[in-house]
Length: 123
Image (cartoon, rainbow, N blue to C red; front, top):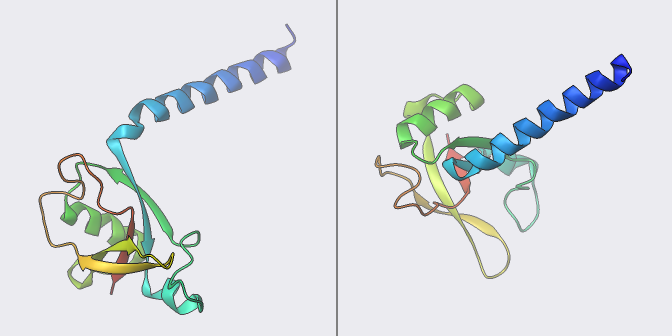
């Protein structure tokens, strides 16, 4: 087998292994879309935020609120003490709005159910 083909096969095998491992560990992670004040100011239609442009974070489902705030501080630069984290809900008019502040330190994911994967970060 030519060397360049052998390298390509090895690379494809490694990529396939990475994808398989990600699929196996997917149930342990929570994917979040985080909207900030900046996202609100950039979007000017019925939907408050263009969720495709919001920050995308992946955290363990067992993460506590304080751990989420630490990740948000590293990502956005907003100090954890000034952060207000709100869940967002889908409304009947197909828009998403902040619903309730997250104040529970038990964990972001409670009893195996997700909090909404879209959250609003109040600065």
